[in-house]
Image (cartoon, rainbow, N blue to C red; front, side, top):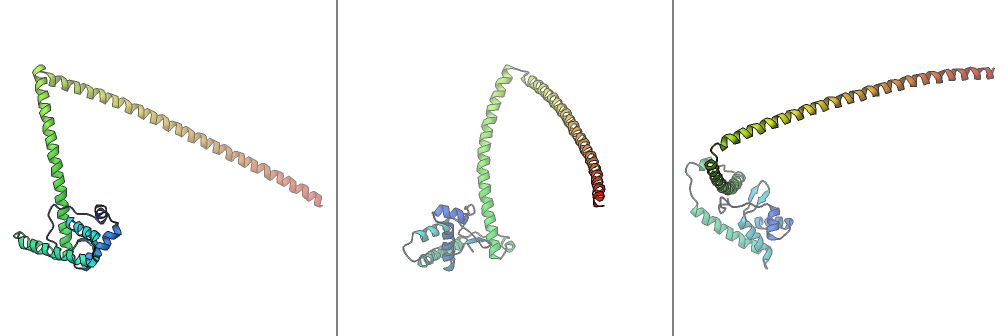
Length: 235
């Protein structure tokens, strides 16, 4: 199992590695297969390889080697084993946690990758929070200074401000209520217009149906006359 990965180390996808190393994504998969064939260990999410910085260094070595790829891969595997052995010798034992860890390598890899990503995200969040806190402190300091100046010059500025806010709020409320009432009236007018259009359409359809019926009766009568006339000629 990989023990040479730092807790806050960034993980890379195949596409990101391809951009980082300057090779095509299929070449990344090819190099990964060559390394694994010679005994190299990758972190994996199912069948998908997850790369860290040491893996990128190995891929660069394969890209730039003048030797056969398998020979270079064997050298890289040897170097990785030395790193793993060194990390095993200096690893920190955490009491009362080993028994709770999963023993399946894939689950361990998934758990490790989850921790790596969570720690990286937490670190970024802490940096952002630190920056936000610094900016917030600066703003608060400025606001306190402004408040002190205003309080010194105008004793009742807060009351006047609150009164102004209440006045503006009431005006805004009245404005919104007026707009809402106007919209309701527009909606009612629109509904009436739509209903009138529907009524007109029904009338038009009814008139058309009556016309069609009258036309049909007229045609039938004419047809009957023609049949009578033809029958006379036949006789």
